[in-house]
Amino acid sequence: MTTALVVLTVFEVLVVVAVLATYLILLTKRLANVSKYLGKIAFGVRAVETQTGVIGPSVLRINQTLREIEAALGPIAEKAQRAAADR
Image (cartoon, rainbow, N blue to C red; front, side, top):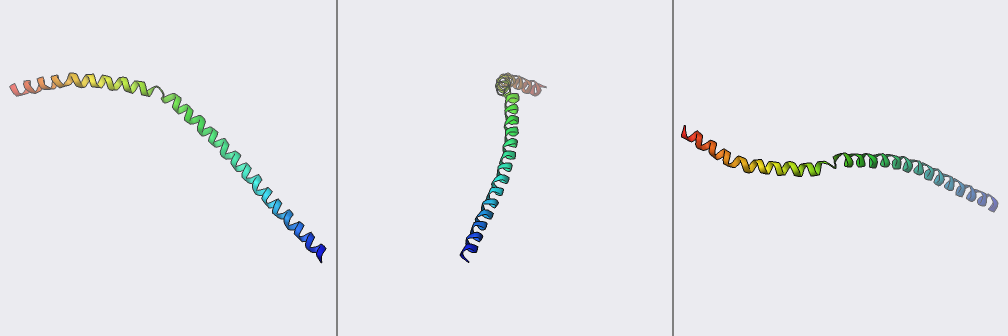
């Protein structure tokens, strides 16, 4: 009887180890797949960052030009209002 219990215990331990090993293998495969996709995403984000890097300085130049235009339009708008009032 003791021998049978020992054999069954060893068998149960082997089953538990096999199940754990199977889950670890499946988990490893899923993590490798996730890692692959994360690498692709990181590559894409870097590409977007590189392509849009020139926008910052351009926006600053455009904003400066718009400020100059705004400053010039103020007096012009006043002159147009005076000319319209004189008619």
